[in-house]
Length: 429
Image 1 (cartoon, rainbow, N blue to C red):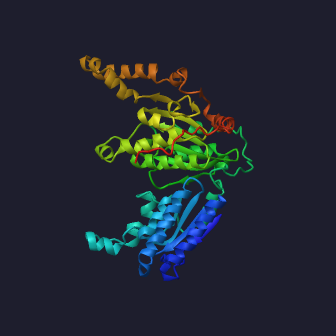
Image 2: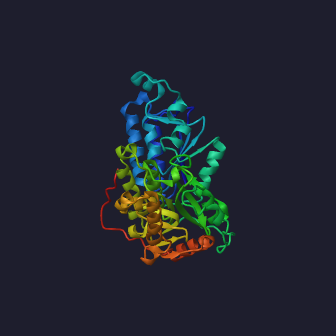
Image 3: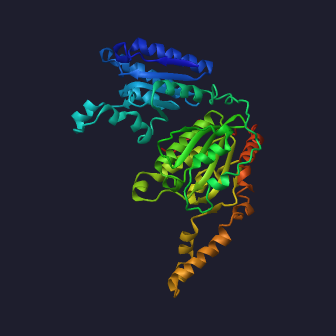
């Protein structure tokens, strides 16, 4: 791997021409060698005394970040302030680590904000680790101290390939492939309206319960994590019923789309766990561009060439079902638990639309509504409805989920990348 660092003791870590030239060379060597690149950031931006020369140095860094994107893993570790144009390089990399109380990232500092808008805010309040890990989504990982942060950087590197031409490292696994997970029957309530922690489900399925969650504090209604199954690295995208009932919204769509693209770029297979009631309704979501942002996730899955396995645990309704790697958009293998409900919408809403006239004309509307809901659920939402139409490959025993997923991924291990002939796509922004 290749590493470069800013030294805050020298001109506050500000970037000048000579400083930039050294970084450019390290970045060029990393790309040529096909090895990961880690930057330790602790600097105050461009060196003002050097004028446009310093700015051109940042431009060279950005260009190399873009050239290396999807070719070698790029990790940015924020160990101090990162202001102005300096913040754009971390934003172009695959992962950003921050330390609470130490790291800050912002384009314009508190003094400029105060002068332009009159707002009073601290360094941490403007661009601290809490802001970027929970609100903006800029930081993927945040820790309380530098020692833990750097240890987790090393752990992440152990789960990533050196470049996009090789696979992620495989380790010896002591966790039995055929280990049954009967506890899943207790973790996941059969009642689709009851919440549960999807992270505990993931921990039960994967090797030794080890989960490296990406963007843990941002858009928590979807879980994105790197795990191992039978020693091989897998990317997991999963609904989180514990937060907003697991609906997809703007932030969740952005988070999952970027994660899917990263996994596809670095040959990491994808497992998608669905328990999703749909997209989050509301004026704010529609005006904020939920169509555009939801399309990002759709585009990412449709464009992914790595092995893709999806599993419906309970419910999967409407467009959210399609977007989260359904068979119709290219999932290689799709499974469902016997508790699954796959439909355009929930039974209550569907019956209210389909049988609206009958319900309105009835002497006892609520009784008729209840009967219609029961009829709709029995005919169109029973666990085997999708399987009968070939949209689910198998309805499996929840306790056998680990063994089934490992078997499916082993079957797909030699899947070739079927890339279209084009310069590049034009994904929704």
